[in-house]
Image 1: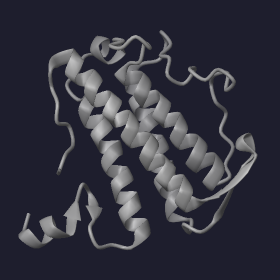
Image 2 (image 1 turned 180 degrees about the vertical axis):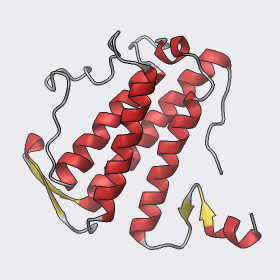
Image 3 (image 1 turned 90 degrees about the vertical axis):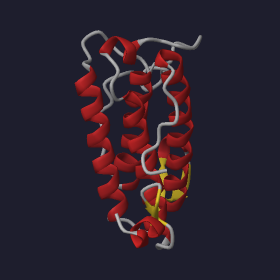
Image 4 (image 1 turned 135 degrees about the vertical axis):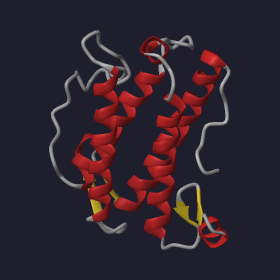
Length: 175
């Protein structure tokens, strides 16, 4: 990698790009960091609750997949999504059912992120986003910033859980 590239890109985002490119780059950075934190762990380790709330690494990945689906697929792109759990249960998207495989959850997250990227690419940051479940209207910019906050917060949780499992810290490619 030449010095110009290193200076132009930080955390996977352009340092002097337009607003949308920088926001999308940072969101992708946190998405990749979540996956990196999970690398090298067994299925049992990914499913192991390490905090009193019962949160697991795999549960965080599953939760973020559904958050991506809700905000980008449903709200930004206007495509309905049939959730495979009771949406009135605030913890349903964190729980891992016996029949759910680790591979399926990671694929679901990667597919949700791909759909989110497509929805964002097709939208303007100023486009309105009606969110009936919150009886509110946002714009795409707010959704992206919210997803940055949501994803980064859970990546921090994941980093702590990973440290509790095997002592590994400092996840975050390209930082």
